[in-house]
Image (cartoon, rainbow, N blue to C red; front, side):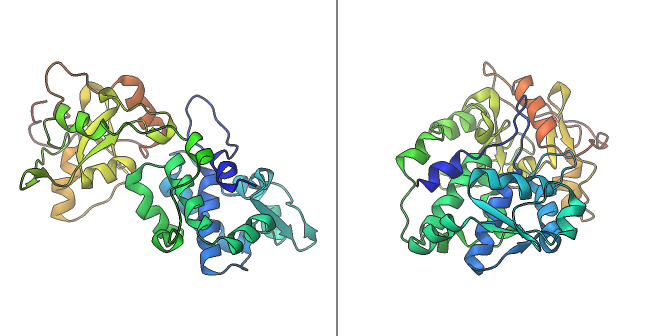
Length: 308
């Protein structure tokens, strides 16, 4: 059985580009648990809060529940659920999952494959990360689910033809195109650091994530410093009308550094791109606003707005 292909093709609810990372997040959590204890079962009542927190941090902005993937992941053949009464999931109801003692873990055949080929763990995790999340979140996600990706990938190869076919190829020119378009400075704060002849701390950010059909094109990119790229992908920062920066009301920062580097951005115009190149397309900006940005935006910060 080709487990990489099966994991790459997890069945997910989709509608008009809405993100549904519920199953991938649960499976990543299960892989992290397996790495720590291959025999451990995940009792729903014991892991519910941790799974909810994963969905809050890495899921869509609207409220959701881990009960859905806990039940439905079974249909993908990679997960099993048992209750105090025997095999099988009792459904998606939160109360019944708690009351029945529902517990899940990786499917028996998958556990057997991992025992036989330990490096498969890292390759499965890599497929999930590459398919569903931007690279800027991979390290944090692995930490959140307790997965040591470097250890998991020891002795592994970079996927298979089937897994590669399930993913689009990234355009290696994307970084150079975006950084050039924004003249090698952060579109939010203007940072333009170099080390010798090389830029340092500047990254090409997809507005609509590449893992969710975002194109490798200038009108779907921003040149951002490492800090603002992370905050943009976590939904702290967004893009509003008239190319102005949004800061989520849910973000709390009391230090001078937080006020200077984050809160003061609210209402500022994006810097760039250079004349003759397209700014972020409305459709990509609106996708980010619906699927990534958290909550309502703060009012514009006091002080003059820098020129675009």
